[in-house]
Length: 511
Ligand SMILES: [Ca+2]
Image 1 (cartoon, helix red, strand yellow):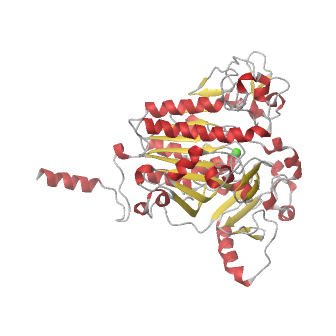
Image 2: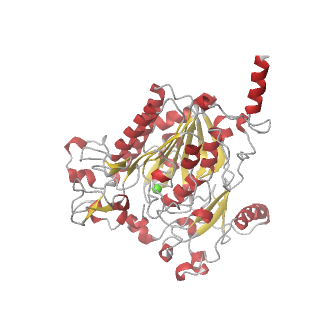
Image 3: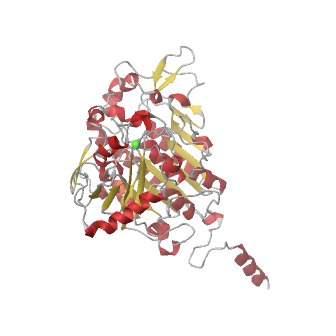
């Protein structure tokens, strides 16, 4: 009888899912979830994706123990990608300004924290210019490279920068901060002698300290401290964004002066990619050491394409980085997932994924009910990661036929045009349609240099993609803000990236 009552109680405790859906997990069975996102490191940078310029043994191993996706697409640049991945909503509905996550938005941090997960984030935040800080975006603990506006009220403990280095010469407020005493600008470094705020405290550093190590040390420690409870970690890495400075593994680092450690040189990009891979390996090793590897879902991606002009040799030829461009070189990013306990290993997946999908996948994996107050754009790709038993109407696991991009670097500023022409497109694995009517076949024209002529055979794909564009709301003045006309925008070669001016001076790109 007792057994019968227990059975009834167990059945009543089950959530009201349809029979093909997996029940919510008990708290002790919930997987840990870690989302790692590099900065300015595109699809082609991984050995497992064909790179022959850089070695990424840890990510290659992670792919062998999980799934390698070949069609994951970000926004062309940092802030729009970050808002989209954290909220699961396309930029046309909630992206308002560069460097800003609006205070009104709900992030995957909020949702996981509310569901009882321990939450932490480390690395580069960037979204608190006029938006929320990491600690107010659903994260219990934070360890972030600090921007100037993050540091108001902190007394400068050590001088940062010299007249001849990148930081001192930077005109960007995000790379300065102000000492209380003299109110003169000083520049923050994200790499050597970094400015890092760890749980609200300014970390005392010197030129032997390397920002990416501090953030990874923090997370390795956090995993150990929280190993007894489910945790969610969002790790937007500092690497591999410029300046391209040496890493702790660069040849001759022990003999370098402080100034040499801060001097940017493109030859160091290889070291930076390989150091990012090494840090991923440290996270994997810590999970293994603590016996958490099997029940931890790890997702690895990049926030946009590789830095502009960076040349990477691949098994399929040279790829030139196109951050800031809507073409593949600016938006095609790696996605490697691994949930070893699911039993799905060593797979490649050609399904489409975009940056609205991560939030839905994360809450699905955590067995977290869908927040009813949110209208999300994303779909869960958990079945591709962990098996067919995770198919679910609730988390919208149906395979994507398209991805959508609404690209407007700074909607509030007329300066956004014409350096960064506004653009919208819908695409599938092969064809891409911009809302100015240009259609490209990416299988033969990844640089988008040949507009396809009208052809009755392609009318159906054009109609399908146009229907996606038509369904996405757009402000009436999208193409006319700042005195730039729709004709100006339509004339811009959108797929080919930012202007020559920016190519000549990548610092104009912004973060
Ligand atoms: Ca970036």
